Each structure stands twice: as C-alpha cells, then as structure tokens.
Length: 428
Length: 165
Ligand code: SF4
Ligand code: SF4
Image (cartoon, rainbow over the protein chains, first blue to last red):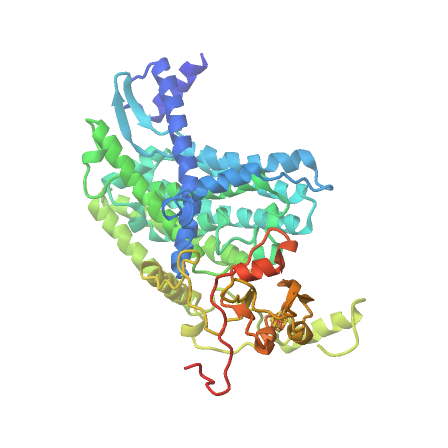
C-alpha cells in the first residue's frame, strides 16, 4: 500500500515517467541510496584532504604528504585516529543532548542530498530510473525545510556542552542561520518564478532549454552564494566556530568521533550547498549548448556523461568554497548582521519585484522563454549588477570598527557611564 | 561602539570591501597556481649547518681507542651549567684518566667552554641536532656514549681567523 502511494507520488513528480514496478522502484532506490551515501562519504573524506592541500598551496606550503602518495591516505589515517581517540564527556554537560547533537548536525546534511538530481535518467530493464534518490515533486521546499534543521545540531551542541564558548558559538550560529535563511529563500524565488515549479528536475529542464540561471538571474546567484556560505558556517562566516575567539565554538568540548561528525557534517553541507548552487543556477547535470543530454532516448552513456558534468560543476564550487576560505578573514558579528539584514534582504526583495516585473512585461510582449528571453533577462541583470556595485562600492559595505559619534551622542554616553556602577575614576 | 576612536577618511579604493575581496582572490589564486615552495622536506632533505654549530658532545679518542681525556678537571670547573660529572682515576703508570665522565645534555647550555678549555682537545661539542630520547635519563651521556659518537665536531671561533676562512 505504502509503495503504491510512493509510486503515485513519483507519477505526480513526472507524468512522463514510464510506470516502474514497485519491486524495481525499491531495489533501484536502495542501490541509489547506497551509492550516493558512499560517494558522498568518500568525497567528504577526500575534501578534507583537498582543503588542506589547497590551503597549503595558497600559503606556499606542501600540505600533508607523508601518508600515502602525496598524502592521499591522510583521510584514512585521520579516520583511524579519530576512532581510536578517547571520548571525553564534560562533567556538567547534559549528556542526552550532548551525545545526540553531532548526529543532529550530520543527518540533515545527508538528507538534503536525497532530492538533488545528479544525472540524466538511466534506462533499465524495469523502466526509466531517475538519477535522484527521492524525486520529490516539492524538491526545493523540502531542501529549505531540511536546511533549517541543521542549526539544531549546532545550537544543542553549544547548549549541552555547558561551556561559555560553546554556548556563544551556538547562539551565534542560530542568529546567523536565521538571518541568512531569509535571504537564501528570497533569492530563490526568482528561480522558481522562472521555472514555474519547485521540482528540481523542472528547474534543470528550464535551464537546459533556455540559458543557465546564473546568467539570467545573476544577482539571485550572488545572494544565494553568500547565503550558502553563511548557512554552511564557512569562512568568512565561521563565527560559530571562530577558533581565535571562541576556541572552537560549539564543538569545543567534543572529541574523537563526535568531533569528527561535526566535521563531516560541515563538509557534507558544503557538498550539498554546491550541488544546490549547481542545480539552481548552473543547470544541474545539463551539458551546455546542447539538448542531446536532456532528451530521450536515454542511454547509459548519457547518464555517465551528465553525471560527470554534474560532478565537475560541484567540484568547481567546492574549490570556490576553499578558495574563499583561504582568502577572506572572518566577519565581525555586527558586520555579519548588517550584511544579512541591511544589504542581502532588501536587495533580494527588490530583485524579486524587478524580475517578476520583467517576466510580466516579457509575457505581455509575447516573448516566449528561449534564447531571446534569456538574453533580455541577462541584460537586465547586468544593468542591475552595475547599479548594485556602484551603490555598494560608494560606501563602506562593512562598517569600520567605529565611527565618530556626534557630540550629543557622546555626551549621552558619557553621562550614562558616570551613572554606571562599573564606572572607574579617570578618563577613557 | 567605542567613544571617539579616530577613523581616517580614506578614498573608496582603499576601503571598498568588494574590490579588496577581488584583489585578495586574485592574489591567493596566483599563489595557488604558482606556489613558491620553500619548505625543506626535513627528514629527507637537511639544511646545511654552520661549522661552528655547538650540539651534543663527542669525546675524541687516541689511536688505541681510549678517550683522550686526562681528567684534569678543567671542564667541570668552567662549565657554567655545572653539568659535567668527572671522577678522576690513575693507572699503575701514573696516567690520570676519567673513572666516571658524564654530561647531562639536558642541563648543558651548549656554550662550548668545555671544548675551549680542554688542554687535550678531548671533549668537543658536535655539529649535530637530532637528539630525541624516550626518557630523561637517556640524556645523561656517559663516557662510552661520548666516545662512540661519530658526528663531526665544532670548529671553535679563532681570534686570528674570525670569519673561519
Ligand atoms: S657546552 Fe658549556 S654547558 Fe655544555 S657541558 Fe660544555 S661547558 Fe658545560
Ligand atoms: S678539560 Fe679535557 S682533559 Fe680536562 S677533564 Fe675535561 S675533557 Fe678531560
């Protein structure tokens, strides 16, 4: 019964799908789950190595090169080390949450990947198999929902550790995630407007038939990119960890495999965010300038080639993540908030209006989605990007450490201080 | 916001976050594709050390393989760290030799005075730096160990040849 329900959902997702028998569906899904999970885990392990290698090259070093050929076995060595290490439990920690928090951080990172299509459908004896673990018709909404679950792991870890640094890290992460999730959600509305659907397959199809969204929706792409950095707690948004001020933030008290899980969660989040960026703005598994890969007849070759195209795009973004990490210093907390609320939020709101207006006008003028449609959108975006750059560049985006106060503000502050019980004799 | 911290009004090119970011990314990318690697791969490659390097000691021996030391007592006397332990002995022919000669390398400050003061050119500081041990006791080198060392010894500073040419 439940299988037929799932199958019915599958049909809703894509009515063009030839009927797949329940047993084929079950077997295929299990295989896809195992394959995706394995690839993701191995990828994450290799990413830790890549991160260290890239940071080393950027800093004119060699990076790990002792274990295996050019340090290729370093992740294995790290894994063994983390498993063998002693688990420490702080006396004052609230154990149930302390133990469950790493898993709570880790699971959503894995869950999100389930709905991302990573290749063209594979024809088999039992019918077409979609190359996505769960072809949800509400794909994108699911991603938004699960992505906001990720913050629980971090907040609970920070709270359950009973450590001031961890708590501060947890608080920061919740504030950060809440602020940037809004900008992230709003920036994708433009994508959904263009695709007319929240199913990720439709978004890919729309990009394959016209132009990739990063051209037609450049500003949404930039906002999404920045928000994705903040959502994954990567530099310059790694305030929840902030090694130099909060020791390690929410995972100060964690050791061994629990610490490792946070690490894996961070990297899987990176992979998922990159995959999402690729899906929403870089055409997913689409190969540019050809429709050969988007149409029937499907073949194994197509699946492999599109899978590779998808992997290449994701890898590019992973590299981009690391590149940024080893370039930019961390934001100050007030800078983080002002970037999220004072710049990204209004910009994305205005952008929705502009894009919706443009689409409406194009529709009235009778311009069908296609090359011309894309070019017009691209031009609109270039103009908008120019305006945005000029506006943002003419002032300090990131406010300086302090600015001169006006005389009356200064007087008020001084008066306040003299009344404070903490007041000390002497000037400032 | 701190009171009255001076903020210099600078031109936009200098304070623009976006331009600085792009510049920074270009810089890191340049290093990424064209790293000036300067790391010495230590255990395989070693940097040359000075001829006057003062490291762990070595006791030189004469042709018969005996330590050259005559137990004159000058080196324990001059040692500023007081880390040389010497118990002198005398054989039937009246030659003095060290019954016990130990240097605690952990206390030694590698000043090289012992080498400088030795009339027999017996004790030397060596050109050597890999000294890891599993225990503190391992750092007390006895006479046997000191004579068994094979690393090159330090060439002391010579006032007549200050540049060591
Ligand atoms: S080098 Fe200096 S400190 Fe070390 S044993 Fe010789 S005299 Fe003592
Ligand atoms: S100064 Fe030289 S000869 Fe005298 S006790 Fe020391 S090592 Fe032996």
